[in-house]
Length: 251
Image 1 (tube, helix red, strand yellow):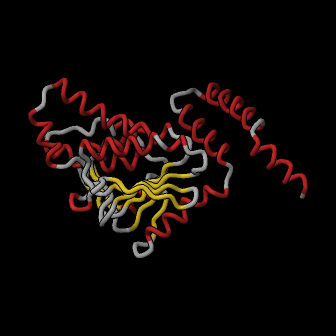
Image 2: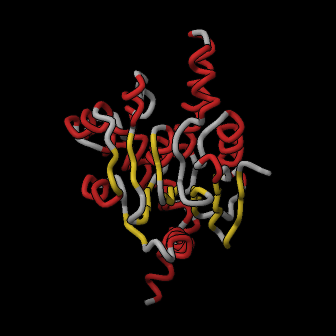
Image 3: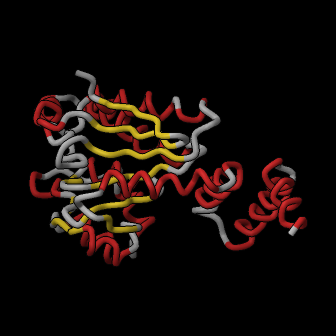
């Protein structure tokens, strides 16, 4: 059985973690498959959005037992290599041309929470809950710290990373981490409908906006605005913009 299910619905590609019996826990095979699936996205110019969701009741419960056992007996160099493989996965969604949406129901814990945060948007149902329980076993949610810090205030990030408690989707929506709460009974349909909004928008404009937003993360205001000027000028040269302006003027 494949650890991933990949399905296209028009211009939306759904990538489903397929280890429901393990609560979609991350292992080497699943991490590698996810990276391969995401790297294939930009080669398909017809895609407008990606949805990552979990099969069964949970999104992803973090590392599986075998992975944790491997960590316990590994050398420092082996642990660096293992952590780097997961770090590459966390970086990929932001590098893609199209929006990547995490569809979370049930558990999104540890690396599973990290995977959701790595996506551009998180949509959840009201059964979803999130947390970094690593500190309870002497582990550090280290790679996800960069994403948590970018999405929360310093004090809230500190509490989230160090207290190890679990938070429901509604609570995270108040922080702005969860974009929307969907109905549990119609979750898959509503999630797909949300993603399909990107089919009606300019693919080039969305892609350029995404790239600009993340490129100005560490810039001062003047540098960020200067990058905006360049992006604005390049956007005006695209076919989508020229056609959009012509259609607007016809009205």
